[in-house]
Length: 194
Image (cartoon, rainbow, N blue to C red; front, side):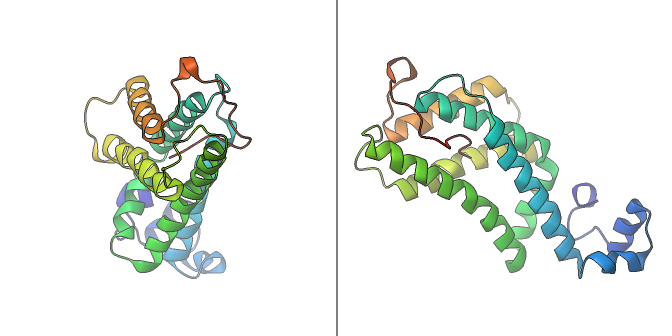
C-alpha cells in the first residue's frame, strides 16, 4: 500500500482492507502508521543487507569486490524502488522518518569505511583519502544514481554499463589498482558498497 499510494496517502483503512483484517486488528500490532512503515523499511534494509552478504565474487581483488557490491546494491534497489522512493519522499518532511533513512544509510557508510581503512592499512587506498568522507561520498554516488534510474526513471539504464562506470569512478577515487594489476586480497566482509 505504501508503494502504491505513498506514505501520506496510504491510510490505515487502506492497509487493513488490503490485508483483509479488521481496522482494530492493526492496533494490536502497531501503534501508528509510522510504526508499520518503520517495519516495512527494516524489511527493505534487510533485503539490501542480504544481497550484500550473498553477492558472488568473481575475483579476490578490491576492484572486483566493489564491482560485485555495486551490482548487488543496484539489483536490490531495483527490487525495492517504489518503497525507496517513498522513503526518500518522507525523509524530507518527517524528522522521525528521516532518522529511519539515515539509519539505513549508516549501515553502508560504516561498512565501506571499515573496508577502506583495511585497504588503506594494506597500502591499497591512497594515504590521503579520508575514508569516512570517501564512504559517504561514494555511497551517495551509487545511491543517488539508483534513485535517478529506478525511482525518477532517468532513461538509458543498462546494468553492465552502470556497474562499470560506478566501479571505475569508485576505484579511481580511492586510488585502487586496476583489476588486471590488482593482487591485493579483499579483506573479509567486503561486498556491497552502496
